[in-house]
Structure formats: C-alpha cells, structure tokens
Image (cartoon, rainbow, N blue to C red):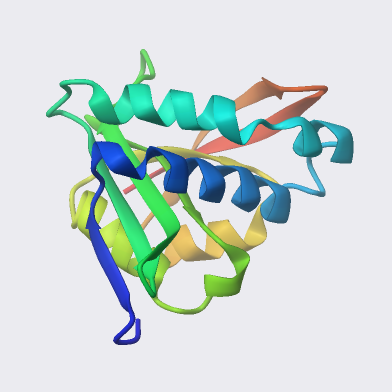
Length: 164
C-alpha cells in the first residue's frame, strides 16, 4: 500500500462506492465464467440498494472494510457468521473484491487482515479462479473437499470451499 491508500471500516455512506466496485470487479474477474450479457446487466443501483441494506442493518457479528486509493473506494471485504449447515468454521468470508487496477498493491492483503485478522474462517471460491486461489493459499486457506454448483444468472459456477 502507498501513502494514498487506506483500509477502514465501512460506513452506511459507502453503499454506492462498494456497489460500483462490486459490479466492476465482477465484470473484470468473471468474464470467463459468466456471459457478457449477464455481466453488463448487473445493476449498480440494485447493488447500491443491497449494500445500503447491509450497511444499515444492526449486525455486530458482521465485519465490512473498504480499501481506498486517493479517497475513492477500490475494494471491500465482508465477513460474518458461517452460513453452511456443515460449516467447518464459525466465521465465513462472504466477499472480497478489488478493482483489477489495484491488483498487486497490497490492498487485498490489507482487507483480509482487517476483516479476518488471523481468525479461522471458511469461504467459497469459483473453482476456476486461479489468481484468487493463490491469494487465499498465501493466507493459509486450503480446500476441504466441499463443492457446490452456484447458479448465477445464466450459468452454474462450480465452487469449492476453502478453510484455515
């Protein structure tokens, strides 16, 4: 991270910035998994409403951090109680996204450290996502053998669960 970069807890006023990153990061990262039509149709307004609801909910068991570069949100991470019936850990990393222009900046590392620290956690990842897999491996996550098909738009994404 450089001097113009920072990681901080998200606030309710960050909904639009997080939504923009969410949509753009999907468009940058998932072109090999999801159709161009589906990715183009993702609505920033709908994601803003979704994030506004999340950020305004009274859920102290959830943690959300944003990464900023020159005071613009360029990434976020979101964790909370594990959602799987057979959850191997109490905490799940629901999402971590960073704009492609920020890859290699150290911001993703800062986000995971701020959001999870060294706590044991689980997460689901698209099986065909080698860059993310390397990142999680460096952070102590390993596949535990659990798999699922996640229907997203007009596709079904094969996902694997990672734990540490």
